[in-house]
Length: 314
Image (tube, rainbow, N blue to C red):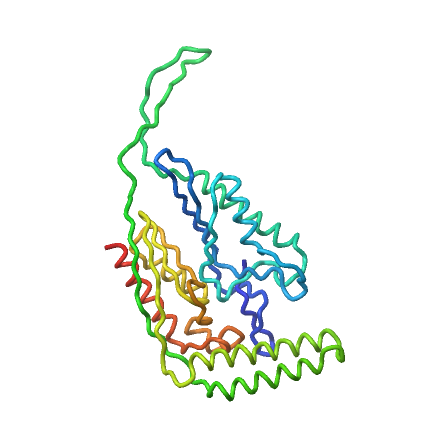
């Protein structure tokens, strides 16, 4: 994975490979067992856009998360759930291609690493006891691994609201009219222009419709209220936000969490748009331009997420 906000020499920020940019490479794995330590399910949490199959693609695929789930599920013998972390400004090392072999290879790499972790996890605390010594070609120490207390069985759920300021939008009718105009222009160009020019027109029409959709939701509103969802399973805290937070936001939440392990995810229950970091607004670019939020949104989101985790910690 790599930060995708590439700044060109012209100053324009495009979706590419920004190697010095921040990317949270942490892969978190949760395993849930029955009382006999037989796997019931696993969770793989990773923050990276599943956009390997880009514009050249003409088939329906699960992209890399589908391969991750398959690899881990087969290794563990239990279903695997994939949770998308804070992926707003991060994508795969190879992206926007039309070759399924690429997402299968990258998904397998991540899946096998996650499977190794899942197989190594021990959900029941144990202690070793020397049972006896068996005389053989060498004196062999035989051990028994016995239960050493109960695992943390805490289960809690909680929600918390976060208010986030939004940018000024024109009336929906005005934005919708522009989106319709761009859609009509695109229809006129089909079959009359080359593929590159048509692709550019598709992008303009798509962004115009996205802007109109934002205007429908946010026009006339100085701020909105979003709902964070929290779940605690033993030492693990899960927080879900209905949008696309930048990678730095997830790292900040995990670093400040009172729980040993924290999974901060976007794309939860709804979609409100990108949440860039405050610093990103100076550079602009696709994520900043299409985000409905003001620059302090990331700070508000981190603060509310940590408060929710404190509630779960109890």
